[in-house]
Length: 126
Image: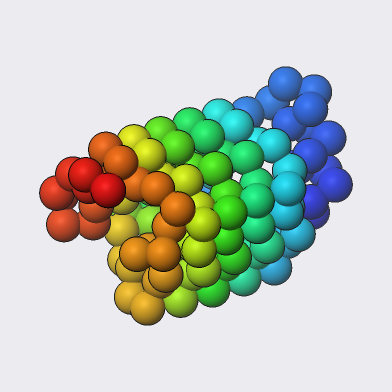
């Protein structure tokens, strides 16, 4: 599947895209609120300023992806692979990152993460 097909199917009302391969896809500034990308390969994807509010990204591989400025409020990122992922300016309020692999991720540079459940299970108050 490529970016165009995903966007077209999403705009047609489909939300379940579990286990798709979208490595290095450019989905910057695309509103994908409520999408289910659980288990998907999004390595190196450009999700800069993407609308991912309420998205399910459980166990997704976001290694080296760019989530800078993305709206990830209330997103499910449990067990996601966020190694070397850029998250500067991302909105993480209410997101669940329990068990996420965040090695070298720029998580602390997120714009907001109030109420987010961090990888260690603690709730962020920032």
